[in-house]
Every structure is written in C-alpha cells, then in structure tokens.
Image (tube, rainbow, N blue to C red):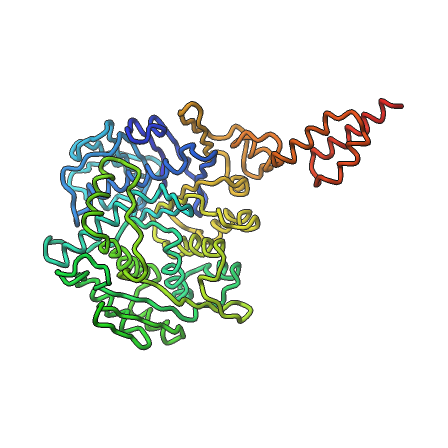
Amino acid sequence: MKLRKLVIYDIDYKPLIKGIELFFPKSDENYINANCFIGINGSGKSQTLEIIAEIFLFLENVFRKENKKNNLFSPFGFRIEYEITKENIEYLMIFDCEEIKTKEKDIQIEIYKKDNEDFSAIDIIGLNIYEFLPSKIIGYSSGANETISLPFDSYYDEYAEYTYNRAFGKVIGDDYDPNMYFMNYNTNLGIAISSLIFREDIPNIDKILSILQIEDLISFQITIQTFPPDTPNKQQGGVILTPELEEWKNRLIKLADKPFYEEKHKKYILKYNLDDITRMAFKANFANAFELYTCLYKFELLNNLIVDKTTKEKIKKERKQRRLLTKMPMVSDINKVLCYSELKLKLKNENKVDYLSLSDGEHQFLNVFGTLLMINQDNCLFLLDEPETHFNPKWRRTFISTLKDITEGRKQDMIITTHSPFVVSDCKKENVYIFKKENNVIDIENPQKETFGASFDNILDMAFDIKIPISEDSLNEINKLNKENDPSIINDKLHDFGESMEKIKLLSRIILLNSKKE
C-alpha cells in the first residue's frame, strides 16, 4: 500500500482544503517510510488526514457487500491514487469523483497492473473493487478535539446499527470485520491486553517493552453486560448479540478464571490471571493478537447502542448537514457493553503496577507502537495525528528510527502530523509537507532545503518562520541588551542567560563596546 496522489477538486464544508493537490513519492526502503505533515495549528494538517479517511469511508460504503449502502454520493470532489499489492502483484488504483455529490455509478475507476517495470490498464468489468481497497485504515489522535475521528465515528455507528438489526432479524446479511480502526486514549487497554498476551508471536515487541521497562502482563478484568442500567432497549431485552458475538463472548467466558454472572444486568465479570496455561488457552481460541483485539473492539463498538435513539438521530442529522457537533456522547463505564479494569503489569525491576498508573507518554508509546506491531498485514494505511505529543524529547528523537526498526518488510503506508523538529529531522524533504495558511488560503509545499539530518534552527525556520530558536521572553531581554551601550550593564546580566548563539553575540558586543573606549 502506497498513496501516490490526492486532489480535492471541490468541497463545501472544509473550504480550507479545496484545491489541494499532493503527490507522495514512492520509496524503495524496506520499511514504512512515513510522510510528515508539519505546520502551525489550524493550517489544515489534521483536516487533510480526516479527508483521506473520509474518502476511504465513502469507497468502503460503495463497494462493501455486507451492510451495503445504496444511492451513495461522494461527499466532495476528489481524486485519489495509490498502489496496492495483491498476491505479490502491484496495482495502481485511481478513483476520481470530479464533482461534489458524484453518483455512485459515475465514479471513474482505473486499475493498472504492474508488469516488469510498467503499469498497463486492465478491464475492471466483473472485478470485486472492494478487494482492491486498503485492508485497514487506522487513525490515531492524541488530542481531545479528535478532528480525524469523525469518519471513524460514522463507520462505527453504521456497524453498531447493522449488528443491532442483524441480532433482531431486521436485516439479512453476514458479519464483517471492521476495516477502519480509530486508536486513541480509550483503546490503550485493549491494545495492551492483546499485544502482551501474544507477545511471543509479535516480533520486536520486546524492544518496545524494554523502553517502557515493562516485563509482562499479570492480570486484567473484562466486564460484558447486555442489559446495562440505562439501556434504551429494555422492552427488547437490552443489547441482543449476533451469533458471532455470542461465540466470542462464550470463548472469553471459558478462558476466565472464575466468571461471575449477575442476572439483573446480564453481566459477566471476567478475571484473568496470565500464566503460561492461560496464554496457551488464548492462543487456542484466537489466531493472533489482532483477532483478539478485533473481538474486544467489536464489543466496544456496541457501546454506541446505549445512546438513546433521539440523541443518535439528532447526531446523524448533524453529520449529514456537516455540523461540528457530530460525536456520540461518552457512555459511562457502568453502562458500557464492554469495559476493562484492573490491568496489572510487572516491571523489569519486579515491581507490580496498575496500567493506569503509567504516565500519558507511556500510554501513548504503547498505544502507537503496540498498534503498529499488532496490525502487520499488507496494504494498511496509518493516519496518525500527532502521535508523539506526550513523548519526552528522547522518545521524540527516536520516533522515526523506532518506526523503521519495527516495520521492516512491511507493505504499508503512513502519514503523520507533528510539530516536532525531532521527527522532521529524520525525514527526507520529499516526504515532508509544510502547511501554511495565509488569508484563509492553505499552501502546502515540500521544503526547499534537505530536512534529513537538518538542525532544529533550519527546520523551525522552514516550518514555523522562527529565525532564532529561543523562547520569546528571554529573546526580548537579549535584544534589549543588544541595544545597550554600557558594556558593564550587559556583563552584569550575562549570568541570567543560558548558553546560546545569542549570548555569544552579547559577549561580542561587550568586546566591541570596550574596544571603542580604548
């Protein structure tokens, strides 16, 4: 999977994005070669990630067989090109919707098959286009705003409603695994549990655990309830599970140490103490870490069913009208269909800690890199919005090198947004996109100078127009002293400042002023 081109012809609800045209270079490197969006807040970086996710949400809904949506229209005018590998054969995919609300039947589709070094067009009649979409689109955001999450939220709502209707026999169709996953702070526990249970089968996970000083998972608890206190479907029996979810639930119950059942809320409290036998039992019931996570994730998506019908209909209407208030309200733990708790870890120093006692940076580190390690199949696209915001400087400095270490041999692609010079300094300039906004117009360009190995001074100048990499208050004080004509006053103030080129300039000014006295 490799994005090659993105064009937004026209869009009425994100005018900043209208007219953007991005080309993504192809790399021969044998690992994920991330494209990096950098620029000031509000310059369109996150919106561009959201737009990419929304394109694939639209294509998913058009070409998916299960939970098929009819009479669909494109949300905006776009063109997207990407390469994808199927059975070791590379294909170039092009989808073109020239206008807003292009009808499903009017989507222009071109597919080119690679033969030796050249691509040649193939006949798309009779092809299952869905098989040529990315296998997974994974979004991530560390911020509370979570702009990028909106297409994923829509996807989850559709899946939850489809599951509900199938359980009640209102629709006929098969279950399907979600192709769009959104990772944020709430996904930490599921990723940690799945990754650590299958740690022996996940290459390079020990590198991540070593950095975090985590030895292993000790225990955790899962609560599954289908008749929560505030369920809006009491007359229908609460949340009715499909046969597939009933099977997943029974497996989780069977694997628990001492399952506790409460009839009133149809609640199972499942406690797991992890040892070699428990780990083997999980592996006998789940093919890998991602299958276990998918099982847990599907139950998490059912939390949306607890939101009352009136609220859901209101939010659907707002989404259709492209208003901002589009997120479903948070469901409290006491009302969730699935809830995690009591996740205990053993550290390298033998101490035992609760997972929630780890810092935000440690949670983010395991969430981001745990997700990358767990989702290792070909043709995945990762859209990561500021994935290193809570990292300390050392972890930011090693972000790209860690990414390369753990994704060797991957046929995947990634776009990240960042404000960190550490990240940009490990990216080639053709993979860096500087976003600038002037007079409500967005401008995106590759840096004129090489960014790989560049100093922070140069990166800050290119991306943020910061000529001198010193904070403003101290720089103002230095600038005042630079206008001072009494060298003794400058000399008395020198000890107030740390070492920098600007301090050296003050020393030079002292020498210059003293020389004029002689």
